[in-house]
Length: 481
Image (cartoon, rainbow, N blue to C red):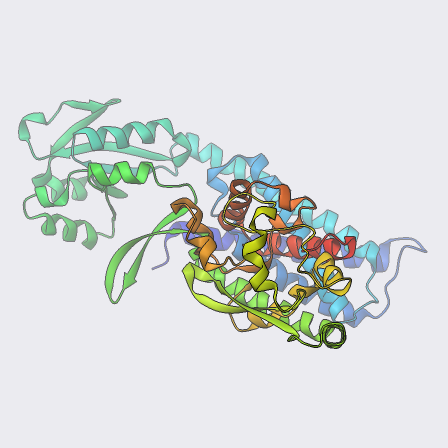
């Protein structure tokens, strides 16, 4: 059975899509029949039917992806308004890109602008009405989840006090159950009293309204605990089990970038702690994005890559066209990275003699005016970043991503501190935040690492798109990738 909250969230998503459809229909009717010339009227009406269908699909998918209603209770209305505005702008951007890709050009820009105003107004207004209704019901306690606490000691007290400090969470503790009958009737904390013993659980569930049960006592200390768990489960009541003290201490110091969830591992339930980069759905979306973009880019730049190959062979015929080097990818997986060769053939043997010229701190090795670079051609390829184009094949092979931390050498990783190795928790990329900096070789190594980790913790397809667009600008600006 679908939970009530999930049903409400689905209903609100449907309402948002419905209001978007109403906004489009009103805009269509106004533009076609009500506006005076030269602003009124429409041509190629069938295109607007296609536009209407695309809008409904895009808006429905985006509302599901961003989960704005699931997160609404965690913030104020102003936060909801900002987030909804962002979603609408993203949707309009996607819509315009699709129209451009499908060469549907006979669409009134005035109508799109009018639709945007109506849609934003309807969604923001409906959000305000729903917010006011929720707040009013919440003050009356209509939406409060009634919690029964099993236990009376420190863990129970901490949990009750946290609930009272966060009224927006909308929980109300109706009382505590204890293993010690002599404690019945005593106050635990903040006015919450012991209303019975654990043995009385069935009677309390029968006579009281209980939405959730929280076990604050370690379950191995409760005699016949299985009986009480089955009892609660059979009534359909949600069960929460607080972890032991030492585990709670670990959780309280858990890095903010880590999420926590249960997952079956070979049919065994496990508690998982994972960073943003480990989300399977998000990584799948990133992979699809990489494949589509890399394949499209290859089609566009293949003629240029052929020209570059010919030029490299003409100016430096003694060496290969491509430079292949072993790098470390996701969690230290070794793979062969490809670049257009920009250095002389004996560059590797010259490296030890040039260590004193290194311009960056840390384990990385960078020289701005590297004497090993092939004159003119090599410098041009490096300056524009075109030497990185063969890595599109690494992306198609799944070894790299378009955006991500640059793949390091094994000897560089050997010098990493432990926290810096988290840089390997995401597939390496062709471009990244660090590479977009004009003076990146002057950026301290630790700052470089923190930029990569900040990307890993906050990446999204929207951020990837912005970095790719900035990378294109960087190439034309001529300060490399």
